[in-house]
Structure formats: C-alpha cells, structure tokens
Amino acid sequence: MGINLLLAALATFVLNLPFGYVRHGFRKFSIMWFVAIHAPIPFVILFRHLFGLGFQLYTYPIMVSAFFLGQFAGKKARIYFDRKKLQGEKIEIVDKKKDRK
Image (cartoon, rainbow, N blue to C red):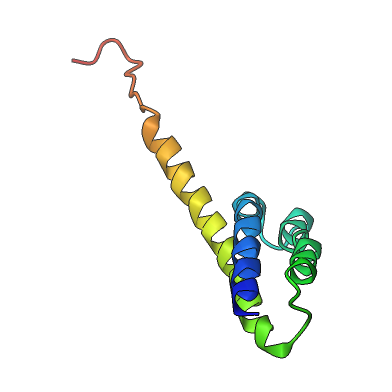
C-alpha cells in the first residue's frame, strides 16, 4: 500500500503543476481561479481508485499535501518564467528631445 500511496501522491503533484501555473495568471477568488484549483479533484479521485488506495484516513495528509504542493510549485514556476521573460526583454530609453546636450 505504501508504494501505491507514493505513486498516487506523485501523480497528484505532477497533475497540479500546470493548474497552479495557470491559476497564478488569474485574479484571486475569481471564477477561473476557483476552476484552476478544483478542476483536478476528479482526477485525484481517479488516481486513488486506480492505485487502490480507497479513502482511508491516513492517506489524506499525504494526498492533500501533494495537491497543494503541486499548486504551489506551479505558481512558483509561473513567477520564475515570467521574471525570466521580463529580464530577456531589453528596455531601451529613448530621448525624444533632440536639443538636449
């Protein structure tokens, strides 16, 4: 049962990475923000079923942690890639007044 729990937690973590990435692009508490959080839940239930975990109480802390860590890591990835994109753009300062010396 232990290896199945770890595999299900890993699958949950990986599934939530793109949802956390997308969620960071929306305004907090908007409809799409809630969708990005709640859309992976049916897949997590499917993972529990496929890995034969059932709904034992001891599995909840691990699965919930994997869920939120995936969301958090996806959010951090979005922040990282947005910063890299901004640093890659060159900012050019143009002096529009031609008489300045």
